[in-house]
Length: 324
Ligand code: AHR
Image (cartoon, rainbow, N blue to C red; front, side, top):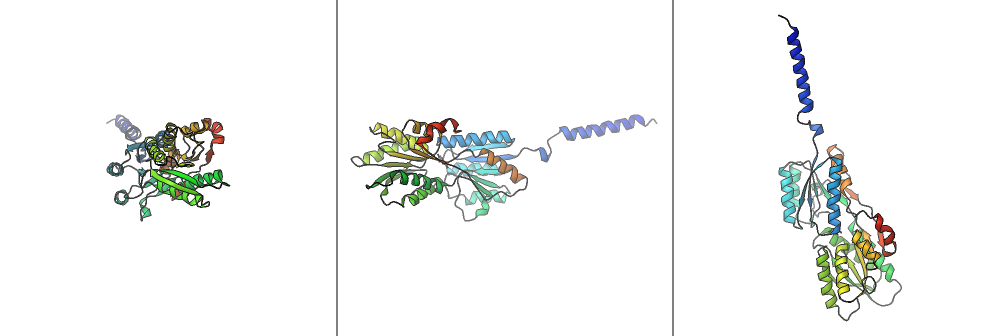
């Protein structure tokens, strides 16, 4: 029997087998990483920029992103996390709407062996092993920076400085921390007093509505300043102040947080006095963290975003450089 054709057949089968391995379903090493991200919603310009940053960075990094918008509801975030666990994603990222109530679902993720990265906001849970890292701003420091700016702006005066405060979402880390930091800073001068404080839920519409109510309640009294926990509420309040026949930024000093383009435009127009930066551009850092985790690296427990303070005097120069 001529064995040559048999050899040729075996060689062809070997090539086919190799080819099948190379061209077939991707091996574990080529498998795309899958990240499940539970976003709070779209309550502010900041949040929209944060979502865009994360979506773009996932694309750039070749990471498959499963994105869930919770529309401001914690129950929706819990459902999303459970769906990610069922889908066996590689990593979960969570931006928690409020601080408490996460223990059960985070334990479920841990039991499934899925690491959780907290982005933007922290949770309050005794067991800190339920997340591997927290990346985002130092909200207490942001509050302090806002307070220090107002202290400096009003220093040397004799009269009481009456402040209205628009708080963020009730129970949210930035609302609590920004309040705490601001109060801590203004303690340095007993003339500075928070006359009224209420939640505006981090939204422009609510900021306007609450400011209208504040101004009605304050009729006949002097209001010196407004401290808004984010720019969107400040922008809503500016409308309310104008509709009440007052000049925002002049009759009432306005201090807010985030540093979105809308705030810079308001500063250029002379209607807002200062914005303390809180960067939403967390996407690239998050994707790097996902890759590092999967490469077996240990992430730092805390990654703090570096940020500045932008008073109205620098707004025109800074506005063209703003990325969100
Ligand atoms: O958690 C960050 C805060 O949430 C931003 O300051 C605010 O604009 C957003 O909605």
